[in-house]
Amino acid sequence: MERRVRLSLASKQAGSERTDSDKFWEARRLVAVLELTNISKHFGAIQAVNDVSFSLEAGQVVGLMGDNGAGKSTLVKMIAGNFRPSHGTMRLDGTEIVMHRPKEARLHGIEIVHQDLALCNNLTAAANVFLGRELRRGIWPIRILDYKAMYKRAGEIFRELKSETRPRDLVKQMSGGQRQAVAIGRTMLSEAKIVLMDEPTAAISVRQVAEVLNLIRELRDRGIVVVLISHRMPDVFSVADRVIVMRRGRKVADKPIAASSPEEVTGLITGAIEQV
Image 1 (cartoon, rainbow, N blue to C red):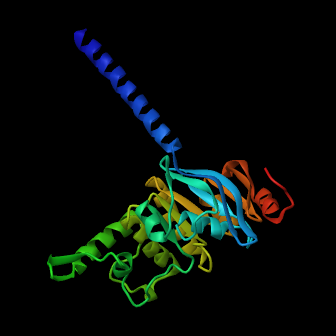
Image 2: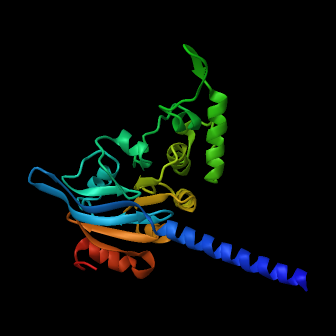
Image 3: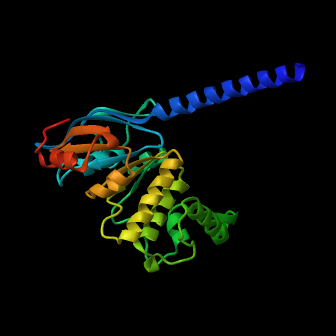
């Protein structure tokens, strides 16, 4: 009898601990990693971004859509530290930040994967992952590159991404999906909180598109915020949790992907639908 009572109490205690843990992680997920408030950017008389506000939560993929000239690129460049906002504030983990250059954004855990990927074709996958952050060994002033350590760490990153990319392969011999894995691997090396991806599935095959979308899911599952800038509606609706639509520098929609449709987003982009 006494044993059954002890087991019952232990079971209740474990259930309470699981409940508390669930509440903790749910609360953590809902805390905004990045919050933009009334962000605007003008270049002389040209208003590129006008009074945009939204927040990004951990472990979330956000599709950022809009026509050419809608303000997507300018908005992303402000988040990435290329431009300073003309007005408005940005908060990272609740603390206001002001950035003057991309290096400061990287120090805050914000990484961008450009459409052209900015890779060196004549170097290996591992060398591209560590480009500018090479590992060295030895005693100063005689220190040499530690290729063994870089190959090992790059291999670990590609395995974490579930990519077939191999650290010693040259980038010029890789498929579009493998190149994306190398570019994303650089963001994981710096333990990014936010990854901005500019048209990652443009001009690659259907199989490679599936590979890139799986890479995005892997980032999301690691608790990283992914902002996916894309014109490809099926890709956004396949992988995104939310969609933000911009038109003429303004945000015209910000809603869960499950509550929207490709037809609605197309209408918002073209102006057939004013705002939701």
